[in-house]
Length: 257
Ligand code: NAD
Image (tube, rainbow, N blue to C red):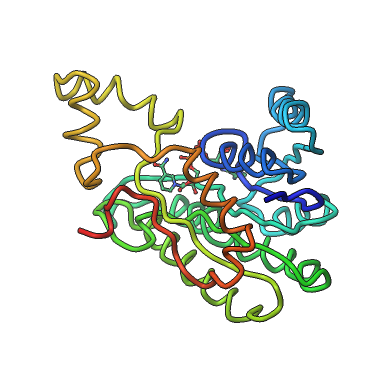
């Protein structure tokens, strides 16, 4: 399959899952637009590297996904958006009664409202072309809950609902909308937590991964950014033309428990 001629916009893609999805889509031939809120030479270098290695067009556009107008402007600046991957996300851990209101608002804005704004901005172009893919990176926490992550879990459940509604509004128009629900994925952010966890629990790396971090993931293995990227490429393939309004879990069995 080739995605040659398609342009993918991936929010929050200067690291982790977003960058992995961009890599997979570029490897499949799509032109890609990377994004985060920073505007550093190294951000633009990521796009240049993808372009050089995959022979596609790649750009980095700085835009703050906490700002609705900036979300819509990202899509406008991209020029085309055949594949929209809503991936930007942050986390905060606190009990509901102590959860800072500003942090609740920020998580809802970045993890949920940004997907509403980018989708609203992208659908017109997709409808005009009669083809489009909206891929929302939700989470196992879009389907299940854990304590102390109220804003994140509310936002991720919201993303799953938004994906379903989007799918219904564009059904039959060549456009699909789905949510990928990863379990624990080994991103640089997660990797950085391993030494601290080893120290706190007095365990070696393998034991802390298996017995602490992946306690709820029955495979006791991390998902990888390559697996999330491969799932996104599948959703862009003709095999997934009738896959819409649903969730695809990549979670080692977490949500089967
Ligand atoms: P990450 O921190 O590496 O990636 C988050 C990305 O969002 C980064 O590129 C960051 O720069 C960007 N971002 C943050 N705030 C932003 C803002 N205001 N504007 C624009 N970009 C912003 O973490 P990750 O693990 O790759 O997470 C990516 C997505 O996957 C998130 O939505 C996260 O909730 C989801 N997810 C991650 C895991 C996991 O285990 N790593 C599991 C399930 C879901």
